[in-house]
Image (cartoon, rainbow, N blue to C red; front, side, top):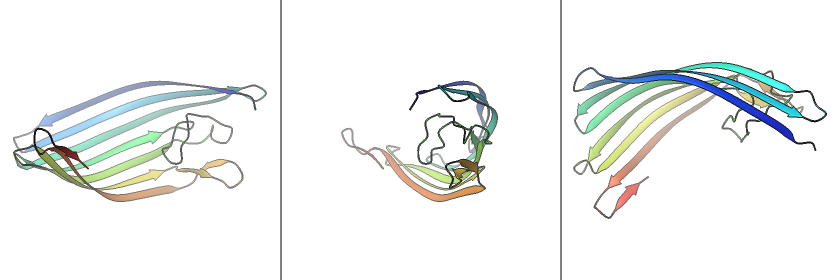
Length: 173
């Protein structure tokens, strides 16, 4: 078939800062604005265009139980405009007649966790519980099209470790 030429212009502005309230308490906060202009041109087909103005933010609180042990809670939002990769099943910034008029997918993430530095702070152990909720999720309509269809939820846990056990032995997982 004919080649499709897709052009995506993105303009973003963000502000993020960390504030140390005391030796034990730290707050992280940020806000971001993105403007996506996506245009697709294909010979023999009408030109497609989508413009999305997206606002997202993040707020986190860290409590240092000990100098080597921190607990945290975080809440953040994000958005994914039509024609951009949804992260589910691929997608490559391609605007089509089936997604050009869709609303942006919107996500919110809630996470709580801990980080513990052990062995003279050479090894970091982490644990987290999280929940991500997506609205305006894009799915196939079964007729070759794409629609915004409700919501999706992911709940999970994550364990990790990273560091240097010796000068020559580094681990992560």
